[in-house]
Length: 150
Image (cartoon, rainbow, N blue to C red; front, side, top):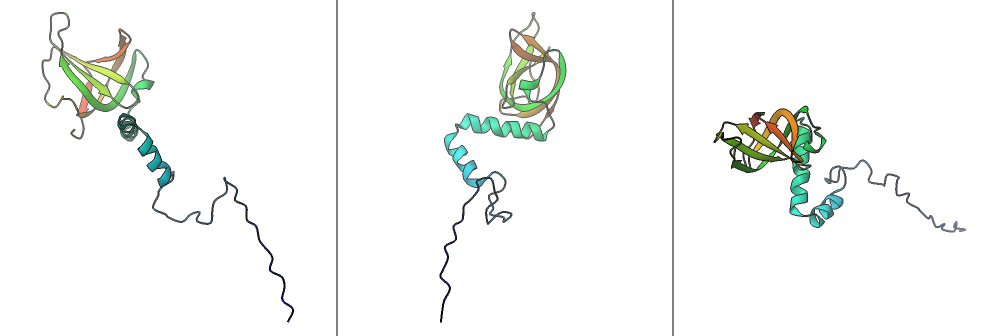
C-alpha cells in the first residue's frame, strides 16, 4: 500500500500568454469589458462623445479634421455644434461649426441665410477645399450630405 507522495504543482502565469479561457466567448468583446467599463467611468462626457464621433467618422470613410491640411480637398464628417448667420463683405453667409472628435472646421455657405436641415446637433458629411483663416480651418460652399438626425 505504498502511495506516491502528492507533488505540488506551481503554475506561473505569463501576463502576455493566453489564459485558460483564451478563445472562450465571455461576451466582453475585444479589449475586455472591465477595461471599457473603467474607461467609461473615468472619462468625461465630452471625451466619450469625441471618441464616438471619431469612430463614426472612420465608418463613413471621412478624413479626421485634425488630419486635414491647408489648401487640400477633403471629405469630413461630424456633428454641427453651432449655426450662425454672419454677413461677409455685405452679403449674407451661413456659418456652421462641424466637430468630429479631433478638431473643428467652419463650413461657410456664401449668399445663404438659411439651409433646410443645417441646424445644431445634426450629423453631416461635407466635401470641399480646406483653407485657414485667422488660424481656423474653413470650407467655403462645401458639398454636403445630411446624415442621421440629432
